[in-house]
Every structure is written in C-alpha cells, then in structure tokens.
Image (cartoon, rainbow, N blue to C red; front, side):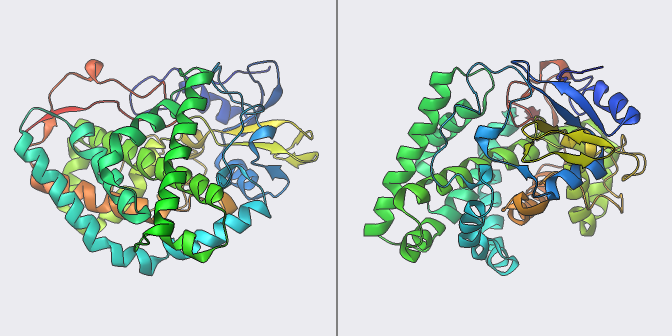
Length: 394
C-alpha cells in the first residue's frame, strides 16, 4: 500500500495517529508525493538517523519534493539565494559551515549567556507592564529569540516587523508562489544592504565577521544571514510558545520543572523530543540506489523523515507518548537533525530555552491559559509547528 503524508493531529501536542501506526508496521514506508512522485516516508528513529548520516542522500533543493500540496512552493523550480547552505551538499555546504563554526562554540555562547538573561528579563518586564491577559507569543516567545538572533547577527531589532512578516510568509504553506518568492527576495535584499553597511561601519557581530573575513561574497553573506535570521527566531519562538502551552496543560510537569531547577536542561531536551516542531521534514533525495532498513530507495527518489514520529519511537525512548520532564533519556533526539546538517544553532536554542522557560514561570508563578484549548490557534499551516497565539493571564 502506498501512503500519503498525514497532517491531521489528534491533539495540539501529538503528531498524526497514522505515523505511530505505520511505524509499528515498518520504519520506512512507500509514499506518494503530490504530483505523483513515488518516494518514501521514514517514521523509525534508527532509520531516520541512518538516512541523515548517509552521504548518499542529497539535501539540494532541486532534488527534493514537498510531502504536502503547496501551490506556492515547488522545490524543483525554486531558486534559492546564494549562501543558503542548509539545502546544499558537500563541498559547497562544507565551505559555508566552516565559516560559521567559530560563531557557535560553547565558549562563544557562554559569553552570550548574560546578555540572553538580560534580554529575557527585559522582555518579561515589558510583558508585566502590558498586563494580563496577554498573548504569550507576541509578548514573550517571539521577542526573546528575535532579540537574541539580532544581537548575534548584528540586525537592528527595530526592523523586526519587516523580517518577521517576510519569514512568516515564506514559511506558510498557504502562501502563493509569488508571495514566497517576494518574501524571500525582500529578506535577501534587506540582508544584502545590511552586509554592505557592515563593510562601511563594522561592528562586533557575526555579519561583520563574515564581511571582514573576505571569504564570502556579499550575496553569499546575505544568503547566510537570511537562513540564520529566519531559522534563529522562528524555530525557537515556536518551541517557547508550544512548550509553555504543554506545561500549562500538564500542571504536574510544570510542578516538576519548578521543583527541580537543576534539571531544567533535561526538561528542555524532553520538550524538544516530545513536541518536535519540525513536522514536515526534513527531506533527502537518493543520489544512487540505497539499501536501508530492508528497502531499496532508487536513485532520484525522495525520502521524507518524520521527526515527530522518530522522536516517539519506543525502541529508542521508553513510554514515548508520555511527557516526562524528569526523564533521564531524552538526549539523542532528532529535533535538531543529525549528521552534517544538524542545526548549527542547536546549542544557542537550548540555552535560550533553558533561560526563558525558567524565567517565565519564576516571574509568573500563577500563569495560566486565558482561553479554552479549542480557541488556541495552532500553526498547522506553517512548516514549523507551534501556536500562532497563546492567550494567558496571571
């Protein structure tokens, strides 16, 4: 039987039920893509990890297919900006990644930690001044990572409405082709101009570092900046909003988080595993015939990896359908990917979440939802899952 990618979720925090059922049958299943392409869906943890680590699979956009119908986005015909290294293979991917590694070391992030603490405190101060009820996404989950990535890159936070609007348009699967192209071009143009400004007026930030190194062209720096700006605030914002939502809906887990602050790091890993906001991929294309998990993926066929399904594989995580912030075995999840394409900023995102979750519930111990669950709008129309708005009071 050939399946199609499922999107209907049984609850705000659980992936489609079909994914669990198919994983129980086999870790990889033949899948029909929109447009008639015959490819594969991976739901098992070990198989997903193996595909992500295998150099015989390509990440290049022109080789891929999107698992759900999206008129506005055709990977095979979309012209990505120079420097958008997430969708490149070695050696092109290696050249860009090498330029950025020094910016995301543990030492560099340790130096940034006091500023992240300060940003979080200032955002919570502003939220308190606004007063209850409030939208936790607008007042907290989105500003914290946006301010942090702006600080790291050297992007003026005053321009946030422009880049947040464009990134949301580019990531919304309901956007038309013209809207996706326009939003991407707008972001690229903005960062191209900003890279030129850094040339004339250098500062202590990542974009200036790339400009002064001289290894990349201005177009490539703009593409790198586009990727880091969008990925650096969209994914972490989604996790902060959805993570706060699931904790408010599970008071025993919130109590455990508050009672054991030393375990906040483990709690973040569990939230990442359990929620897995990358719900539509990643995708890989076979560069040659590949035997994996007893199946033959033919050259050119596309494989979609369901990270939510893989992160709930009982062969890797005991009792995976249960959220347990004291779980000792959440590490090793695939929320940030695996292999050479593992998210470059995964340690930064972890640091932001460890600081932000704890600070939020320490400042507002009586925080609670201000609307019934059915009125919380979920990001089912986005490539990154989460909540559009989260009404709260205290």
